[in-house]
Length: 124
Image 1 (cartoon, rainbow, N blue to C red):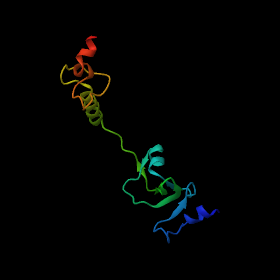
Image 2 (cartoon, helix red, strand yellow; image 1 turned 90 degrees about the vertical axis):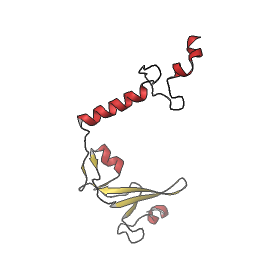
Image 3 (cartoon, rainbow, N blue to C red; image 1 turned 120 degrees about the vertical axis):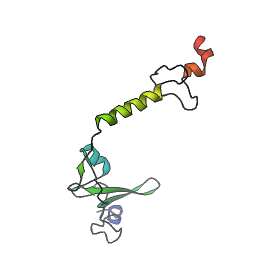
Image 4 (tube, rainbow, N blue to C red; image 1 turned 60 degrees about the vertical axis):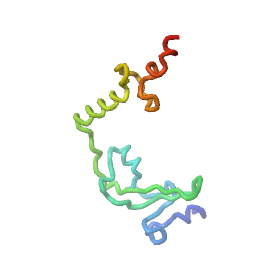
């Protein structure tokens, strides 16, 4: 075990407060939020069970780990929620001046579509 890895090895949690391993050194049964999401799971309200630590750019980096056996399945959106999201995204693409639904989100800095904001450039 290298010197850097040894600095982050604390499986009992005596030094860091919770069990700690170096990057890619955690035992099976733990996962990060991103790994849980990829597996179709979520932490489900459980506290952080352990952590990974490594020397990174700007100092020591940390990734929190959750127990796989306590993870719950991801929740899926209801049809009503999906309709609401589609309506909100459509509203962001609708120009308030001309009422045309654009293929891009209307810039908040302009408050209207590019064609309405710069009509002289469209005519040219």
